[in-house]
Length: 96
Image (cartoon, rainbow, N blue to C red; front, side, top):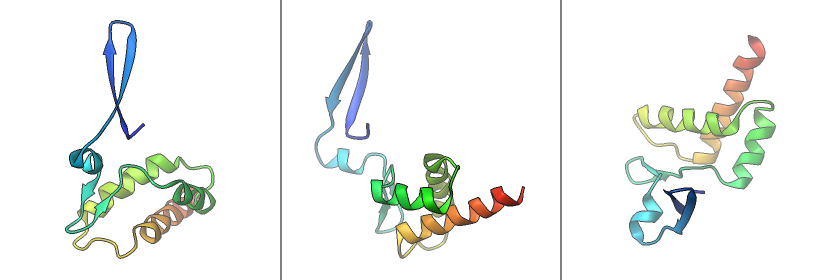
């Protein structure tokens, strides 16, 4: 639930919609002019599931975000770079 803040109040969970400019950037990683969303889009999730069947797409996305931050230049296409990462991990998983 990236658009909501959650708080515990005794035994109740309170959800509050995030707002303002800072909320839009929360969870995003800055890559020198562009940013990586906190979660992949639904379309990208489906493509990644086809590229890496049986693997946890959200874990792969989190790993890829860390990998992308270590690179000297940001990816030209976030979707293409992530899908390439998924395909590589799928090949590695199949080989082991």
